[in-house]
Amino acid sequence: MDRHLPRVPPETASRGRSLATRVALAFVLLAVATALNAQAILEGERHHPVTGRNGMVVTSHDLATDAALTVLKSGGNAVDAAVTAGFVLAVVQPRSGNIGGGGFMLVAPGDGGPVEAIDYREKAPAAATATMFQDENGNVVTNRSRFTHLASGVPGTVAGLALALERFGTLSLSDALAPAIELAREGFVVPPRFTEGLEQAQERLHRWPASLATFYRADGSAWQPGERFRQPDLAATLQRIANHGTAGFYQGETARLIVEEMQRHGGLITAADLANYQPAVRKPVRGSYRGYEVLSMSPPSSGGTHIIQILNILEDYPLAELGHNSAATVHYMAEAMKLAYADRSKFLGDTDFVEVPLDGLLSKSYAGELRKGIDADRARPASEIQPGAPGGYESPETTHYSIVDRWGNAVSNTYTINFSYGSGITVAGAGFLLNNEMDDFSAKPGEPNAFGLIGGEANKVEPGKRMLSSMSPTIVRKGDRNFLVTGSPGGSRIITTTLQVILNVIDHNMNIQSAVSAPRMHHQWLPDAIFIEQGFSPDTIRLLEDRGHSVRTTNAMGAIQSILIGEDGTLSGGADPRRSTSSARGY
Ligand code: DON
Image (cartoon, rainbow, N blue to C red; front, side, top):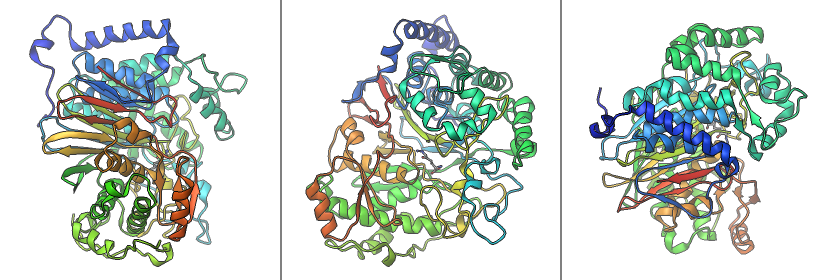
């Protein structure tokens, strides 16, 4: 098999200790440092880009950042670090990073070699049906796809991370798992965000005895900041994966625990669903924007396709001249976003099951057609916009992290269990939460999901199908050089959040931290409103309203973790201050 990423250089590999030993040693040192000064480890630098020459890691949790950076410093490559971070996040940030879910990883070799996408999105179980989230009268029963055992797709994370390691890594799966197992077994010091999350989700999680026992103290209250939180069941599950590879999750004891959990509560996932789960290697979608090459996630994500579609529409407007977050710029962005989300509602689904007109959606000429309908001075009501006719049918609480290694190899990874804490249901005895990703299917054509996204026939539930996603791990290249590595959580807002970091860097010439921190806007066609974060001026809002937009201030959107690679190889990391545990570290 072709390995595009450099292996550990022979001179490093032969210098006495093996890579595994050096990684293990580095973790001992890290554990000592943590014990000495836990608070310092929990605090990241957030208000300016963090720079490095040899490696950079940006994740939503300091402990994952540190574990991945330790791997890079010990001679591992970006994929070794990414897989390590993925498992550590599953321990320290169970609300989003989780082995009970799935996601997408983009790997871009530093030598300009082809970018590969690993699709480890969950799949509908074999017994799933198109109407499983409707009652006998055909009405959608929303809670069924969100908070029951029927809400879970077959998890893909373990298979996806293992495949990434097999294709590109230099660490063994058990070495990549070692820091996660240690953190689950020995525990970690709880940061305030961990406590806040569990307090907010209390009602939902207390309902399930295994969730209550796994994530709360004996009296039912949340673990408090500064306390040590241990997860023995999860440690045992991770150890089974370390011992037996993916069979330690998809077969044997872990599979038995998942299937028994399903059988006790009317879930659909069977032993065969687990044994049959396979991640897919895909070609990312590709576009260009003002001389840069944009590579992002292909279906079953809608994210990459619509980021490129919106960029294609916007390319004709002088955004730099119009200014960042000026009324004119926001107007054009909103108009372009509406058109893309309208198309999403009709055309996007899992390309293993349905034909998606990708060539058309990604083409500059279709973007040009759509642009003709945009008026500079007037917002088009959503009701006037319908999915277009792209042509070109081809037959064929989420978390993001970005990593670049000393060879310039880049990994952009977004994975999720959908809502914060997913379905809220923990697999008894196995210590991890189950996703509620089935809500990303359209329960009935035309009915919105939890993110207000409308789906069509292309995204109806079918056995073995992957539900449509918005996750958009993205890598921008300049020539054959990796330039920007980015991606975000945020449901429907992932697409627009990722888009804005690209615009902030390319059009508005911001440093990566400013690009990540700047206030963001969002429009998704329906509901027909521009959502803005705090920080837009009242006159901008007034000018947008004068054009006919409805403007609503909303909570922070997304948590985008990004790396910019300078021409001289300098790495700049921008961690999103919207998550208090986010951190960028380089060396
Ligand atoms: O795949 C998707 O598009 C959603 N399940 C992502 C959910 C999400 O980002 C929630 N986190 N903030």
